[in-house]
Length: 221
Image (cartoon, rainbow, N blue to C red; front, side):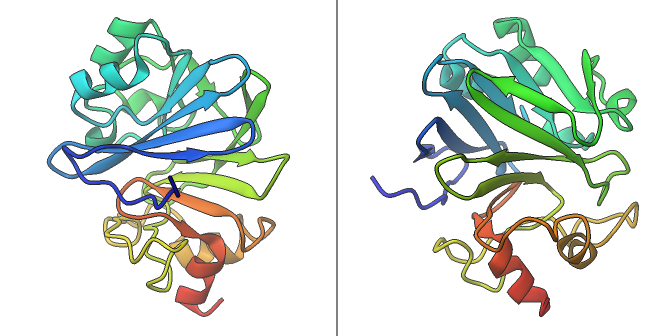
């Protein structure tokens, strides 16, 4: 099936099949936060991005096999299920080094800008981008068979210019929930994220997917 990136809390996940990596997107909880399960095709090793809510659903999704959980930022609605998921799977906890102390579940691996997370033969790179939390991190998967993929947490809303990556406009919380802690989404797009191409696929913490090209078009960058 063609991946569209549109999910709803209580509904089925959407699966994005890449050459070496499988990305499963699911929305959970009353705020419909997006969680992403990344699975390396060769080894089956898995990493979950944001154990946001609804621990039973996430535990069923990972099927007991989980190497790590990466928390993109310390807002509670993005790690409410973290303790239960870790207890059930033994996964290693990771979060931005600047925000790790604000998460009630201890962070075993603090992430700094440029740190790499090995997932089987796949590689994720952490980007410390601040944003609506001082230590917020994004993760980049530079697909060797295609374009980059960017998991942004709340740093970008995913709304883009209203088109996204063919997935409609997102109901994200990137700009709308900012607390003034760091650069605006527009500043991120023209600054820290400027080296990533327009084709970069954006996976936000809420709402539909987008691309950096659509996000840049949305701010007139």
